[in-house]
Length: 336
Image (cartoon, rainbow, N blue to C red; front, side):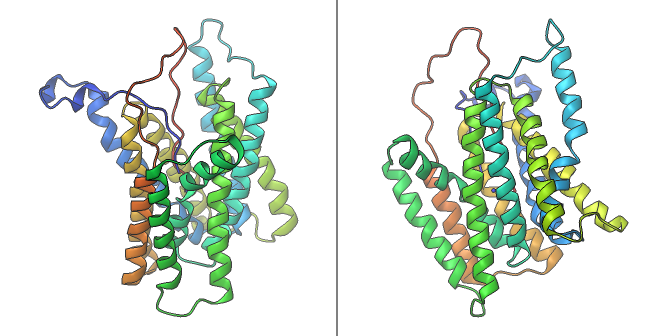
C-alpha cells in the first residue's frame, strides 16, 4: 500500500569524494535500514493470510497491539520538550487525524478481504498503486495539474494491471474479480489516508499524528469486527503469532524503520521502499505460501512498478524556503 514524502537535500555520504570513514554513521545506515523496513512491511500480506481470525479482526489487532509502544514514544517526545508536554492539537489537526483514520480503516478492511480472495503478490501490487490515486485526487479535488511523466507512468501502470488481471493461468472467477476490486479500492482508501495525514501534519507533529491515527483507526475497526465477524480473538499460539507479527514486524518495525531512514535520505530514495515492497511480497508469498505468478503476471507486475516509478513526484530543483525555527516536514512510510 504507498508514499508521501518531503524533499530533502542529498546527505553527505552521497558525495563520492568523501571517504567512507568520514561519513556520519546515521547516513551510512540509512539505506540498509530503509531496505530492512521495506522487507518487514512486505510480510504483512503473508501474516494476514496466516491469521486464524477474520480480516477485520486481523486489521484491528494490527492497529491496536502497537499502541502501547507508540504511547511510550509519545511520552519520550514529551520528556524532550522544556515544559514536558506535547503541543495541543487544534480542530484542524483532529479533523485531519479522523479523516486519515477513517480512510485507513476502509483500506485495511477491503485490502485484508482481498487477500482472502487473491494472491499476496497481486493484492500488494494493486495496493501500491496509491500514489496514482493520490495524484488523481489532487487533480479532481485540489485543481492540481498532471505532468507529462505522470501521464506516461499512469499508462504504463494501467497496462501492467491489465496483464496482472488477464495473465493468469486460468479464467477469472467471480471471487477473483471481487478480490481485484477490493485491492484497488484499498489503494484508493490509502490515498485518502495520505491526504488526511498531510492535512494533519500541517499543525501536528508526526508522533502524535501516527499514535492518534492508529488509535482512531482501531476504534473504527473494533465495532465493524464485532458486528460482522465470528472469529475475532485468536485461539492458538500460532494465531497470536500471526497477528503479533503483523502488528510488530510489519506495522511497527517496518513503518518505523522506513520513517526514520527517509528522514536521512533524499526524496528520490522513497522509490526504493515503494518498489521493493511488492517485489519482496511476491517472492516471500511464492516461497512460504506457494503462490506462483505466471510469466505474463510477472511482466505486468514490473510494468506496474515501472509506471509508479515514472509517475512519482520529481524533487524540485530548488528547495522551498522554510520558516526559521520550524521543524522540517516528515515522511509518511508506505503501507502494506
